[in-house]
Length: 265
Image (cartoon, rainbow, N blue to C red; front, side):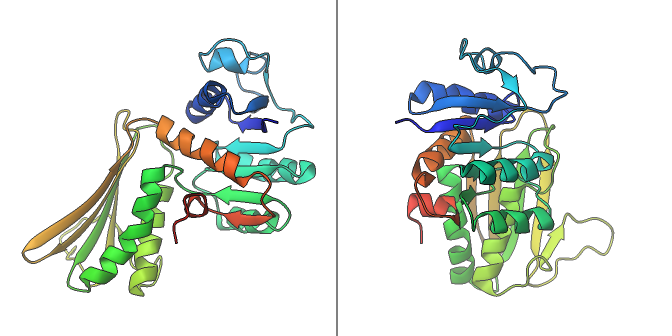
């Protein structure tokens, strides 16, 4: 039996691609397409909004009772309701929303005691491989190498730095015993902006329609190593999320990550 999928923020940029690629895969039954009550697309067919033809699933604000898996890449304001609805139905959740508050992150951990939740700042397979190696590289290179993180996204992205950039920084800090987030310096300006030993520079670019570029620079006197991940389209994130949604069904309540899906230790 196919998973009964609810897509949160189904009329958004990510939501439309989730609807489209989940349908294309033929491995899910989309039973719900959730949007805010005041959204101009409310009542329209989610498939038509996604550009794939009618699915007979209208965009709305009501959750179907039969849902057993939800994917949410919408705004932080929607996360609380998503958690409540998933708990009420015993539905698994793949949550890719960035910019969650500390309180919301704690709520995710609490909810994961009752339902299986996979939370990640980036569902791309390649990006998760990068997450797994940035700390190891930093530890191998040692203290003589300065570290800078540069992330680039489209002009419409609200939060900065990206959740993925912060995850990169967290993993580096953990592997090198740096305090997080105290080691981060967000951009530099002024006449007294000399780099301090041990700090990690964090830089956010917002321009045009850039899907997502993350670069980690390790530089010492004489050489520079750069690790880079470039997302060509949102589809790479969606495919990772769909892979995660299939993986998490049937798992016991817990907080999972893409590393679990991919078997990364």
